[in-house]
Image (cartoon, rainbow, N blue to C red; front, side, top):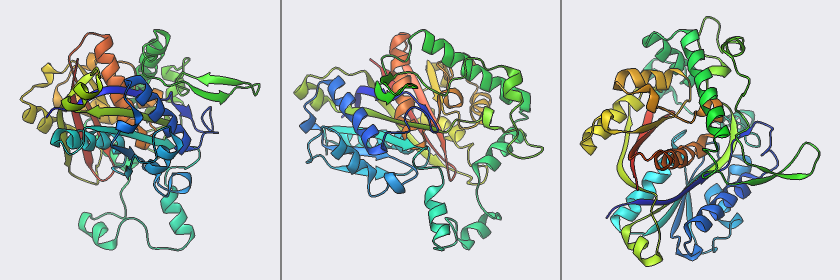
Length: 390
């Protein structure tokens, strides 16, 4: 059987301590789940499972955020859920698990989703809580560290290694960051995100209720000079907060069904899932894995990069999509056409379904056919999903 996407939505990104700061992550995810179900027109009781991506599963995101999001939504309490962590690719993997379920026929309707409140549950909180409690020595055992000859694994180190390997200067990274903001500004002003964004009620500056409908992290006044003035993460390096993804609060969801469900519920598909790939490689450089993962996905799909009309390559750090473009021989004009995580934010566990919402709607708005999404992930893993807009 085939897997189809019948709805894909996200919140507009919220900056740290920004407009989404008062939303409990369960409630935020529940709000998007409701919007996806409403948008598809399906009976909420027809949803057979919810697969929820979330990275920092501590505090308000602990004790099974997927189930709690279902309980915060209008879905019946009979709808089960599971919470998964594949680092930044958590909700992209949620899509792939959902697709595998409906393609196998074991389930017909699965909702893939993700959430991350990086304001209320700061990045790295699970590790810091354990350290404060004096529990354990951290996520990597001595055996793992000895195997790879390191004291630990760092995405910041990996990003610097990629920049060095591919010869990216600080200026080249900053120029890419500027282009991300410029594309996001243009997309927002053109209304390109309106179809995919779920309005969220927030308190305005005067305390009155208003709707959060625009990504908060976009810098409309960004210049190469202002980006270049941001302090480097490490002395002598090339990575700064300005050419890396923004800390972000957000939630997103995608409803995945098979053809049996399309007929039974009278659903209209937005896209067909064409390929599911996940690979793993070097955990030290870590963030380069989207390159071999993309090669494998294209080979298994019997496609070339020239067949792909649009690509969403997560802008965790500017060197990642830049290296991917060079290694794959891809067209820069097809990459992250509405901006990426540098301008729009990277709500960790929510980014996979967030990027899919953007990709599907961008393909349909432009009358294009094939889209490819890939994400670098902690531990040297990468997901690739190829979709066909319908």
